[in-house]
Structure formats: structure tokens, C-alpha cells
Figure 1 (cartoon, rainbow, N blue to C red):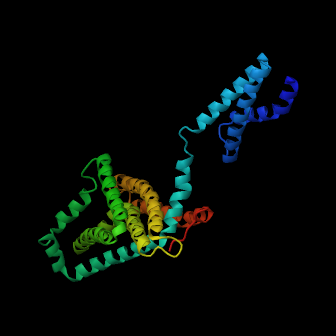
Figure 2: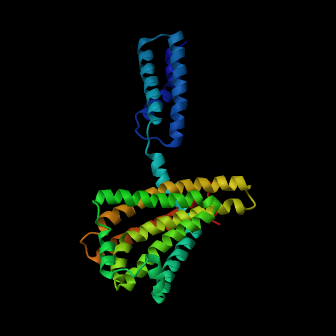
Figure 3: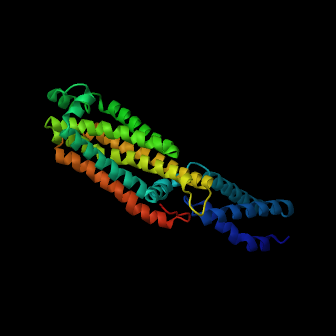
Length: 321
């Protein structure tokens, strides 16, 4: 075998392989090219070793093959790309795809909460029956305010984060049966509505809103998303549509529900930080509410505006209906 001719013939491939292994990041097509060139270089090394064992060429090719193998192995290690893809594409696309479900739940629940407050204020007897007696106004207000600073901020954060994540997860998991979702949301509605009615009855409606709004915008939206997506999962096997069987539809939407479930853990983490550190802080009420409202608006933009962009770019984009 003419070694010089062989090197001249394949030298371009070897130089290309060396350029690829020296890069820290590779595009998908470049990674495929790296694997192909590594395999070819390994074959070339075997041929040279068996037919023309030139020490210099063997050393260079051996080093190149080892570098190629290391680069391929490095590509199998921990990568942040799947994490970035989750938050940049998968989560916002899933939120956008289910938007009408959780937006409807949000509107209905907020309207029902204010309706419950108005009804109880018109019928004070309901408040007395719920609490067993007419609440002492001073104690009620103190207990409500002190609830947010009763524990150390870190401990309180852990409690509310876990509790709210469990509620959202239960709504998602129970969605396949539909009815339990209404029960879970109803429990939340009654707790918030009755406390609100009691605070307004005590003349402390402004305090109620000041301490609910900073974290409540984001926290309640996350719970409503859990309920809405849960209902979408349940509806998937009742009305799967013309393109999928009931099983295929259920699996499809349950998979999207899992994406949302993971995302809500992080949304509720932010809400927990707000509830533990911002809500009970000494900041002016307008600032506290502004912080919570700003983060809530940013999340809605992420879910509805960015979600629409990423949903349309997905090859497996699906309808939200």
C-alpha cells in the first residue's frame, strides 16, 4: 500500500475529525458527522497498522481515534440541553396547548370566590355556622397576619411549597376521573372565600388583599393550571377526537400533563419564595403586590405568548381543543 497516497486520500477526513473533537459544543448534524468520522478513522488505523506500520502515522491516527472516542463519550455525559429544551419549548408549549382549560378554570374559580364572599357578607349566619361562632375581629386579623411570620421564612417556605405542589399534583393525577378535581378545587375555593368573607366582615378587606395578592396571583394560577390540565386529561378519553383512539388520546395528554406537573413545581417554588419573604415583609403594600403581579404577568406571557411561538415550532404541535 502506498502510504503517502493513502494519507493524501483520507487526510481531509482526519483533519475534519480533529476539528470536531476540539469543539466544546456540536450541533446535532455535527455530532453525527463526528461519530461517522471516528468510525472511519478507526478503520483507517486498523488498515495502516496491519499493512504499513509507520510509527509517525500510527501515533497520529491513534491519538486522533482516542480523541474521537473521548469526544463521543463526553457527549453522553450530563447535558443542560434537555433542561433548556424543557423550559424553552416543552413546558410553554404544553401550557399553551391547554390554555383554554386552565384559563376557564381560573375565571370560574375567581368569580366563584368573589361570589361566595358577596353571598356570605349578605348572609352573616353562614359565617357563624362555618366557624361555629362569630369570629372575634381582632383575633381573626392578628391570626391572619401572623400566619405568614409564625415560622422562620425557610421553614414556612418549605411547608407552603410542598402543600401547594401536592394540591396541584392531586388535581393533575385525579383529572382522569374528573369529579375529584372539582372536589379539590372546591375545597380551596371555600377556604379562600370564607377567610375573605370573614376579613371583609371585620373591616379588614384591604389587609386580606395585601397579604393574599403578592403570592396569590402566581400560586392560585398554578393550582388552577393543575385543575384545568387535569380536566383536559380526563376529557381526553371521553372525547378523543377523530384522529386518535381513547388510549392514544389519554396517553398523549397524560404525557403533556407530566410536563406541566414538573413545571408547576418550579412555578410554586417561586410562589413559595414570595409567600415566605415578600408577603410578610416590611415593604409597602404597593411594592409587595407589584412584585407578585409583575412575576404573574411574566408567567402569563411565558405561557401564552412564548408558548404560542414554541408550540407552533414543534414538529408534533397539537390542538388545544
